[in-house]
Image 1 (cartoon, rainbow, N blue to C red):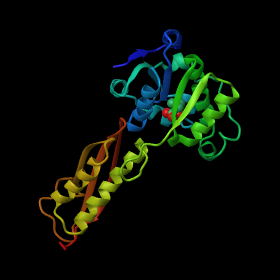
Image 2 (image 1 turned 180 degrees about the horizontal axis):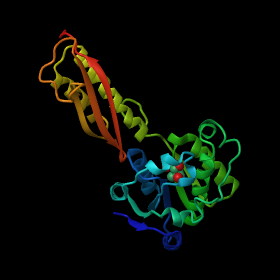
Image 3 (image 1 turned 45 degrees about the vertical axis):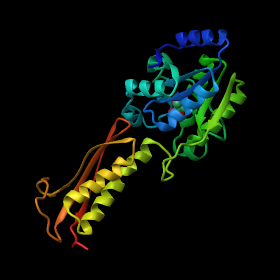
Image 4 (image 1 turned 135 degrees about the vertical axis):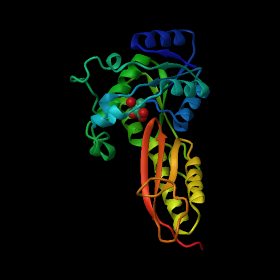
Length: 280
Ligand code: PAF
């Protein structure tokens, strides 16, 4: 398990020590809820640099929706275990007050004109100013290093590159290819969540095609089990009035399929109706 540092002063002191010993530093910044996309960055940092370090900090400045920030849940122990297994030896995990002592009062941000205003920036005003601010602060307190950012957030990578260049930060920015699942989807919690609706659709198709309830439930479970980022809570076919498992189903009977799972610490629920079909 990596050493956990909670203050920027200690972070800087530790890293100065690493550099003084002649070792190179590879940094990956994250907001926790780590998955295989992050670990690929850690592994690359650990391969290319003598010491791989990471940050886990949910940055309030980049959430243009306060509720989104409140909902963001980090399981630090799980994240540390994953980071350690991928070769990270030290993690900066500061409190919000340590990183942004003035927040939620006004805090300096960094605007990268043009690049930050389009696409995601147009839909999420201020988002990239908050990203650039926290990246500038962390890179500044980290000092000379190589910093690894995923190409999955391509606009973020462009904004960070430009900012590092404009501000002449002592950092080499490396963009890393997106990790994809076998079906080509990029790894992220949002994409992982889609598996719940896919599972419901597959279960409903099974019932409408005349398959038994137990088979439809099995179909849902197996769709979800293909998605490593989702922990299934339940996948059940129920009588819509009683929520009990229907003991037997007749053609034309209306049932409800319920599903719930946890994706990156967030519990999601969904359901659909299905009309039982005749066996084909
Ligand atoms: O990509 C992210 O997770 C965040 O935007 C980052 C770079 C850690 C800054 O908070």
